Image (tube, rainbow, N blue to C red; front, side, top):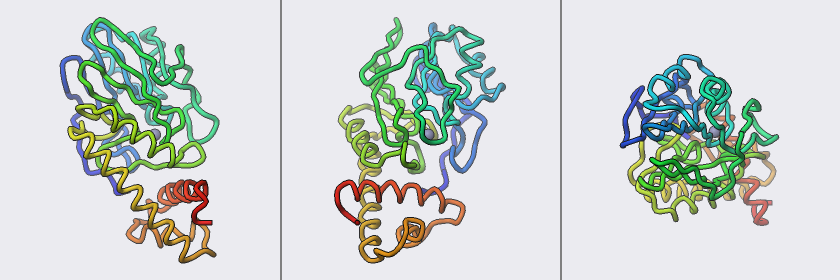
Length: 269
Ligand SMILES: [Zn+2]
């Protein structure tokens, strides 16, 4: 859980029919900002239009080489989906994704025309995107597999340069690890994350994340066993001794996610 290092260009052509636009919302949580992807050349699918910033929405329209027909979201956190409404109103595009869950900090303006389930497919003459349900960071999180390129658009399930916050109850560590294993099994060529640059060694990246989480979990278990009287809040410095004060509250949420997973397995109580 370190601050972001990667830098991302404002606009990049990543492959034929795959363009990436960086939203102007850099922060501790979003790194360089949210990535918006434009898929296709003639009929365009936008993945994650980002926060409702009008100059970003204008850029999405300007950089689209064809007409925007579909808008997909990976999940409904405030840095990923609030621009959907204005973009859909301006283009008439169909909105696809899973509705916002009740828990957590969610964008409740998000209203999909088509609610997606795991395995659902959006097919055009130019591309095919398959929804992969990946709960963990958010219960309604979908990754999208571009089947021709064999690239996975990962939203906040996997990001570049940092680990993601798992914030219970909508965030769930057990689901998160299972979803990572599922993504690994897809054997994709590249991961196109919601924050940061394209990741070219998917299996190595996913293995590292799983290993990192399991190591952290072992630390959590050891700290709980050594200090059974401490609350989750009090355990933070034992598990994250190096944590910067400004990241402490986030670390506590992920620590709680580990504690809940351990308790589910009858450990650490
Ligand atoms: Zn998120």
